[in-house]
Image 1: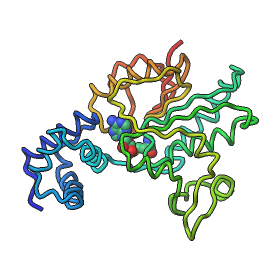
Image 2 (image 1 turned 180 degrees about the horizontal axis):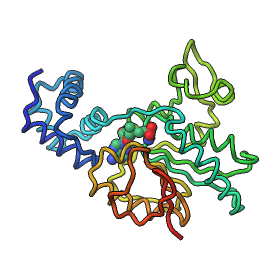
Image 3 (image 1 turned 30 degrees about the vertical axis):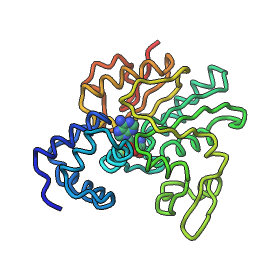
Length: 269
Ligand SMILES: C[S@@+](CC[C@H](N)C(=O)[O-])C[C@H]1O[C@@H](n2cnc3c(N)ncnc32)[C@H](O)[C@@H]1O
């Protein structure tokens, strides 16, 4: 495949930005080129110009979805950024217990292939007293349909489960074939996986106690981050929490949230 020109790179980057908010920096040009090459081979598209033309025409929404799938970065792991799980155990759960309402609403808003929402759900089940008596409403969304399919299948390799202790693995997963494990059906059923683009207006009727938006803000520019945080504020209940990735401090934006600790923010009373 020929070299991606700067002009074409800019046009692809513009389409990505318009459709996902993801800001692709020029130093990612060769990464974009290699990802596009794979897509074009698979879709039998002869050159960048034809791909651009089809994407811009809006004639093939399926191709646009595939395109966003290949350009988004989906790296994730179970119990990633353990400090957030300590926060959930040591502060979020004790505060919930004081409210005595026995209902929790959680949204994993860029859930990738499911490791984040499953880790949070397992953590809640492990640390809530009488977990079965709680009504846990768990929504997990992502812009990529490809990762959502993985999340819904709930099948992970032994290596992917390396961050989980053997006792938790045996409690919540079953081995289905050599080296592959499937999360128990009951856990899968507790999470609603949906396709959702964070750039769209939020459609929620009920507010969340906890929203995770981890390791995705980094791909948005500061204006987009600010708009997104403003939307999160409308869908988190007072004294509820927003958790972003550890490297994504919101300090540069005038966010109007209470800083709790690194990457954890609370909607003010
Ligand atoms: C690096 S992964 C992070 C996954 C998980 N939150 C974590 O911290 O391990 C970023 C995810 O954000 C998703 N994403 C990117 N732009 C998005 C958007 N506009 N709306 C929803 N999800 C988006 C990507 O598809 C990807 O799965």
